[in-house]
Image 1 (cartoon, one colour):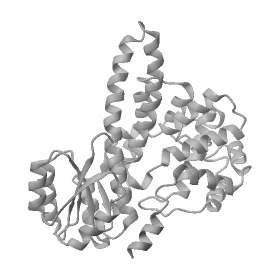
Image 2 (cartoon, one colour; image 1 turned 45 degrees about the vertical axis):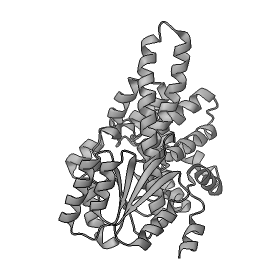
Image 3 (tube, helix red, strand yellow; image 1 turned 120 degrees about the vertical axis):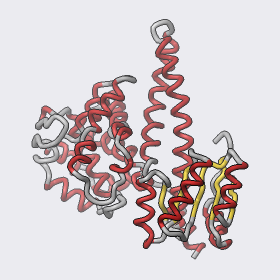
Image 4 (cartoon, helix red, strand yellow; image 1 turned 120 degrees about the horizontal axis):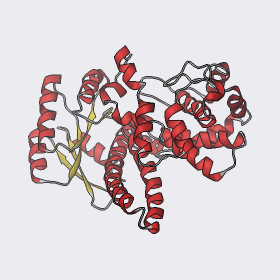
Amino acid sequence: MNNQEEILIIDEKRKNRAFLSQILNSLDVSIKEVSSLSEASNQLSNSTNISMAMISLSHSYANALNSLRRIKSINPELSIVFLSKIEEQDMAISLLQKGIIDHIALPHNAAGIFSAVKNGLEKRELIKKNKLYLQKLGNLRLQQQKNIRKALELEDIYDTTIENLMTALDLRDVETFGHSQAVAKYSQVLSQILGIKDKDVLDNIRKGALLHDVGKIAIPDSILKKPGSLSAKEWEKIRLHPSLGFGLIKEIKLLKEVGNIILYHHERYDGTGYPKQLKKDKIPIEARIFALADALDAITSHRPYSKERNFETAKKEIQENANTQFDPQVVEAFCSLSLDKWKKIRFDTTRLMPSFENMLHTMQ
């Protein structure tokens, strides 16, 4: 990072502040500590470098809401990590849905706190980079017909923008961090097993997998992060994201495999998917491949309201859904590779903070 970020820790107990500071010690940040919201307001009023606040409040919902709104009014771009106990989770989720806070973590969960802060900082940096990339992209498009060298530079910026954009989207939710990277790798491996060798096609499949959920930019957080069941109208909005994503990306540059994955990744082999209810071979092969890769990651990953399951369970579920949700040839390709190899692919792609167990052990 070019300028060192500042994090403000707000907790009335000194030992809690010391615990939080120790967790963040390995990050390249400046840490400030205060014991009250009034002190926090003074710090925020006098500093323009504070980008994140970590807050632990023992208040009622109304008081917490008013206090956090005051903090946000001083610095609207401030990212807030809210430390809430299990019995306060309903209040915390409500604040998250209102856009008052950005992340939730348990007060003594070192891994969760570190992940929330690290991802928040990375998301902030990636958004800054994407703004610069997209500005440069727009300028280069104007010169494309006149300057071949600028057109080649555009290609490099396009690739970088795709990866940074999707990383930023993953970081929108700490619990799904790394999802796009995992499904991209799964999709490439499945493609190679099925005989796709062309490097450009494989790279386009990777890009399509990274961008598959780009349409969710247009879906409100109140729907994406809603605990519990969605209403019929909310499901209608969710089902728009493939078409919305296709529309967004084709304005930048659209390769066949990229667009097919974005638009058709929720189609099902039996024709009951969306948005076009395509059936069997009418669904592009790259979208059929991605559908299985996406399901594999969803089953074996932790989500906020569902526990992760093992690869053995994933294999059984995938086999049971051959000819309905999945192309049986893609299922056969998946089963041809041992589960140990799929586990290794996942580990190599999504490993994050490998030293947490040691960190937690030393803090207990």
